[in-house]
Length: 268
Picture 1: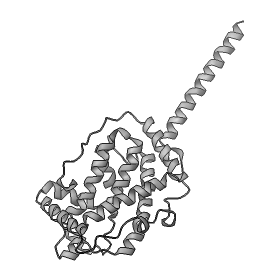
Picture 2: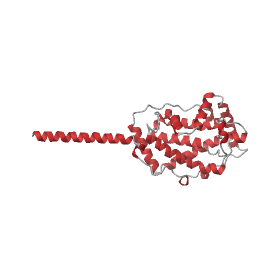
Picture 3: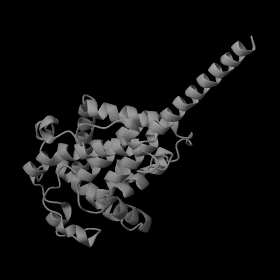
Picture 4: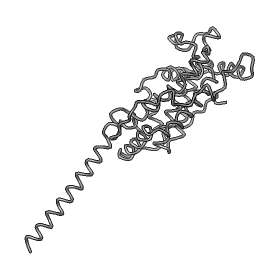
C-alpha cells in the first residue's frame, strides 16, 4: 500500500514537471525569432502585386482643378514650416531607418517596438513594408513626376533632398507609413486611431518637406491599402501576422492608446 502511494505521488510529480516544462517551452518559443515562424521569402515580388498604374489615375495635369488643389496644399504646407516643432518632425519623418520607424510608431502602438523586445512584430513589419515598396515602383517609373521643389524652383525643407529624382508620384514614404499603421492596427486594434493619425501625419510631413504633392501622398496611401489587402492572401504574411499576435499575447500587458488624432489643417 505504501509503495502504491509513493508510485502515485511520483507519477503526479512527473506529470506536473512535464506540464511546467511544456509551459516554459511555449513561453520561450513565443519570444524566439518571429515567434517560431520562418517565412519562405522576404517580401511579395512586384509581379505578384496589384499594378498601381492600372488602378491609380495619372498625376494631375497642369491647369486642372486637381493641380490647383496640389498647389494650394503646397502653400499651406510651407506655412507649417514656420512652426519649429512641425518642421523638426517633418525632417525626422524623412529619414527612413527601421529604428526610426519603431520609435515613430511606438507611442501610438502603446509599447516599445524593437528587434530585441518584439522580434515577431518587427519581422511582420519588415515583410509588409518591403512588399509595399515593391507595390509602387512601376508607378514611379511610369509617371516620372517632378517634385514640388524642382517644378517650382524652391528649396526643400532639407537641403539634401535636392538630390531626389523625378519620381514624386506616388509617395513612397506615405505608402510605407500607411502600410505600417494598417498592419499594426491588426495586432493592436484598440490603438487604431492613434496609429492611423501617426501615419497620416507622416504622409503630411512630405508636403512640409516640399518633396511631394498632396496627390502623391494620397496615391501612396491607396497603393499601401491595395498592397496590404493582397498580403492577406499570402501564407508567409499570414504566418508572420499570427506569430506577432501570439507574441503580443505573451508579452506583459501594455497600456492603452497614447496618441490622439492630430488636429491638422492639412487634413482639409
